[in-house]
Amino acid sequence: MTPVRHPEPSPPVLTVVDGCATIRLNRPQHMNRLHRDDLLVLRTHIDALAADPAVRVLVVTGSGRMFCSGYHLGDLGDAAADADGAASRDPGLFEDTVDALEALPMPTIARLNGSVYGGATDLALACDFRVGIAGMELRMVAARLGLHYYPNGLRRYVSRLGLQAAKRLFLLAEGAPADELLRIGFLDHCRPDEAALDACVQAIVAALASNAPLAVRGMKASLNAIGRGDFDLPAMRAREAACATSDDLREGLAAVAQKRAAVFLGR
Image 1: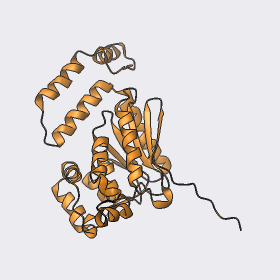
Image 2: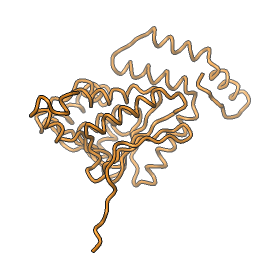
Image 3: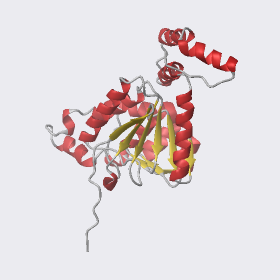
Image 4: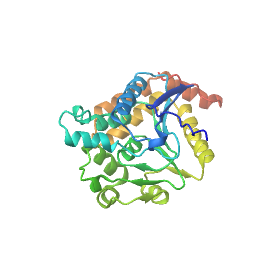
């Protein structure tokens, strides 16, 4: 009998097509768990996207039947057992990587092709929109591991889902099914199958890509700052002023007057 050959797992893959970027987690045989090397590659991809004004939107998804099972527990154990272990050389790597994803200027969508566990739940929360598939669940297992979660992850949970929902998910460490994730606002949409999931994601991508990027990026930054409790009025006024004198605003007004689709250039 010829053995079944599975594709070798690889670090996250970045593709960009017509201004839409996709980062795909690519360890399907291990439920797309994130190793230290994966985080380093993911951070490289995020930094490249942050410097590319031509990218209008980013989709983050996984290969196979699960979005992501979180940080590789073997790496976590190495850090706990060995002061010179690979994971302990940069203990904030996971938090810093997710923070960098949240800080990307373009809007981001988590295409949740399956369940999401542990640190991957915060990876999804760092995205601006989350679309899930029927049958998925969320499970935050930090308390069962004896782990106090990192501060910015706790902040994202509380600011996006509310204090009581964050307490239930963290302290009880129980699985939350898709309908509950919709109810508490973790999911924006839930679709019955992959085809419907893709159609929903593409509809959001199209809506975001058709809007004025200067306004979208500016309001994303301001809304995230408000969500963090960092109400920097001068910075918000500067973004407001930049849009008020922009070519994009002139184009948007002209398009409305001429009853045509606007062609925005992000300036």
